[in-house]
Structure formats: structure tokens, C-alpha cells
Length: 178
Image (cartoon, rainbow, N blue to C red; front, top):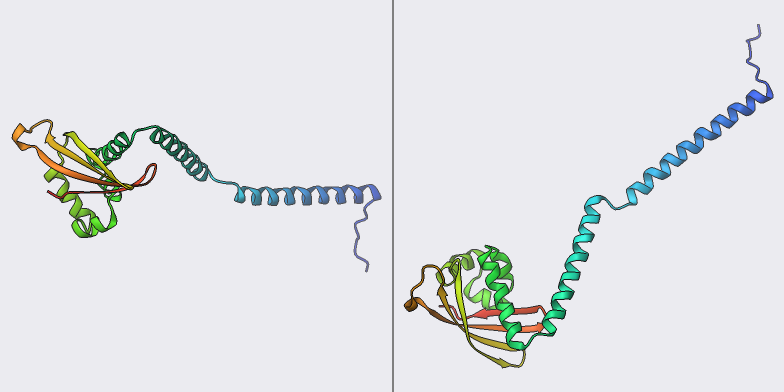
């Protein structure tokens, strides 16, 4: 007994082959599209790159501004940056500006530094720059610190700030521990 065979006309065969080819193309296109999406940066990657570009642009503008400053103004700016971090509670950023040997000697940990800061610097420190001297790439600032809110004239403290400028906006610092 012979089984019933389905017979296709030549137009039917061409139609089925055409549909099969179209399905194959659609599947391949979907695979290629999925792979290309894997290689595209995500929104997080784009945000990170954008942030990096903005930070680099900001740094270049700062370096250009620092190049046009007098030495005294640059050193006061660097010390002001340090104080700004302290006033904003960004102790780790202020700590990172310190010279490594100085940190190891006086503040081996960030916690040691955080404990010391309130003994000298207050919420609103009034800083008077008394003098500045230079020796090579090292600058020494003589300052007087007072509590701008609760301080008395007799509570003023004198301190020396030592700043080593490696390049514009690339410096380390230390200070007399009082």
C-alpha cells in the first residue's frame, strides 16, 4: 500500500522556499542586532564617559586659571581648597592632599586626621595670611587661624602651611601640628 504523498506544484515549492529564506534572514538579522547591542555602551557607560570628559574640561580650565595667578595667590588657592574640603566635611579629600610622609608621621589613618581637625579648624575658620616664602618648589605660608563665629581675639592660633607644587593643580601639603 502506498502512502499518500503530498505533491507540491512548482509555484508552491518556490513559495515555501521563499518563506523559509525570509525566516532565515529575519532570524539572522535578530542575532546580528542582539550582538551589536551587546557591544554598544550602556547608559551608565555613557554617563561615566560624560562625567570624565566634564571633569577633564573642568581641570583644564582650572590649570589655565592657575597659570595666570601669582605664586602667592596659587598657594592661597591650594590651601583654600584644603580648607573647603574640611568645611564641607570631605575629610578624605583633604587627607589625600597631605604629603605621605607627613600623614604617616602625624595621621597614619583618616580617623586620626578627622579627630585632629576640630582642634584647629572650626566650622567657620577665619584665616589671615601673614607671609609666604618660596624655596624651589616648596612654599611656606604663615597663617593665623581664629574661630569666626565663637572665637575671641585671644584664641588665635599661628600655623605654618607647607605646600609642594609639582605642577599646576598637582600639589601636596603639610602643616605645623599645633
